[in-house]
Length: 219
Image 1 (cartoon, rainbow, N blue to C red):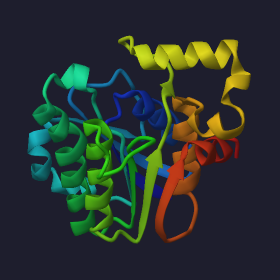
Image 2: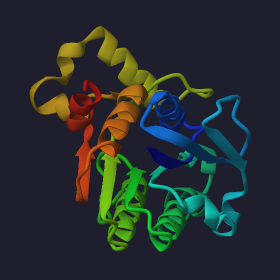
Image 3: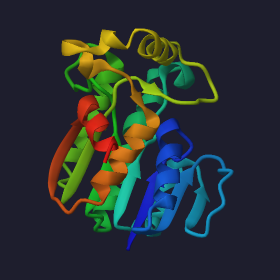
């Protein structure tokens, strides 16, 4: 039986992953860390609502088998590069360091397709930097999840995701051949791939791109 800590459970992937973790018999306890309470009740679920700036005051939460970090924002919501960097770099790295200090063997981080610390684009650059910072901690098992555009029901509209959903539904043949790797991923598929990977007994650092997410999600 496994225990999990899910950071960012209120997001699109986080909510899907929470559902799957609570349904999975191999997980006996799931702890969530969010900025506002979730409308979810389950005997396996323990919720903690915090300011993520105080994450290091919650060290006992990291005494689990697996940490899933799905926290993230957008430049539109963050409004400034500084705030975006705090959410998408500082918080995940702080969580990873706490997990490493408490002996967590398995860590998941959701970044994005195109993550590259040398990218000319700020978004991709931050995603690449967070990957490298967490790699340096040398977890026994690290999964870096790089989805394409995410599809799912959000509380707010995102033009890029709406466009991806429309294209996928109306002209699916567009994402064939070389373009297959940029086909949007359903949030539920990303969550299922993460769950399946967490149940595997393997060590090392793995980068899971969009196409592999789709393959894993069908297991």
